[in-house]
Image 1 (tube, helix red, strand yellow):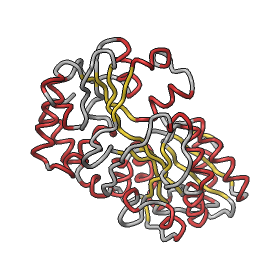
Image 2: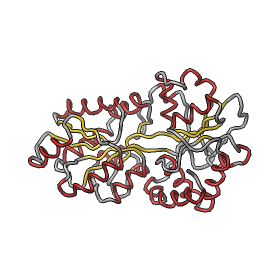
Image 3: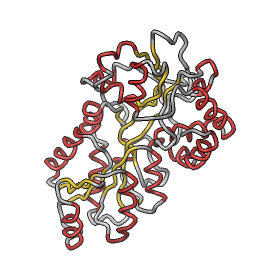
Image 4: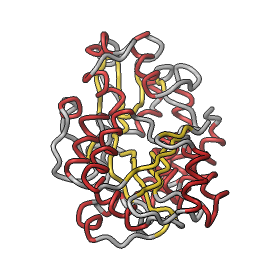
Length: 338
């Protein structure tokens, strides 16, 4: 279900339809579901005088809504998580190119669309976690997860999860479809249980003893350092972690980002908002408020993220990775990955 905030969904559609270009407004469609983002919005409003009208919902629902609204869509910005959804939005024709010196200077090329239709603003590393008491030699690369030595030990999310889709697409990009297919089959053979739950549930699986190895995004674990996470924080010390593939491509990075809507009625304000998200202030909120890695280099990390240590990220072009998402889904299906 879509959730409207600031203005009720129906009222927003009706109001903006009659005054679409009203100065001082920004209509934001967001699938980011983090309460800490409130600070981002209020600070932007205070700094610019622009009022943000926000509709929140699941990414696929928001994309479908914008497609259905067409040229009459009130949306100025789509903000979402994961490269796969940003690519899906571009393919659906609901974003437009942005020419901004600020964004080009701040956002690294590998986390922005090659046609400037979307930009990444925060990142999460996809990490291998393990039970320090039971695993003496944890996997050091993503490909290692398919090693028969780990049979019955691995917990990982379903093939429908966008984080896993993008991870597999990156393996296709780096190693080719044949290696990726063998990897997927090997991981299925090594699963401790059928895929279930979110990333935090994979970590809880280590705590409960259901699995000895788990794959999850960095911010789920970092969150358990910053505040209490039920079923995880109290037992966090038993969990070790590996930033994978440090002698090869580096750790895979998930992305959160956004773009200007194709029919944005307040385009200038939309560009200002994206430029604000690339500011040091906003970047620090992403890190401190939601335990994410800033998308802009040189911004200080929150203590919860810094505690995970330094690592080499994969700097492959995510535009290229996005092209391999359909192939990744095909491989998942053929491997029997639920």
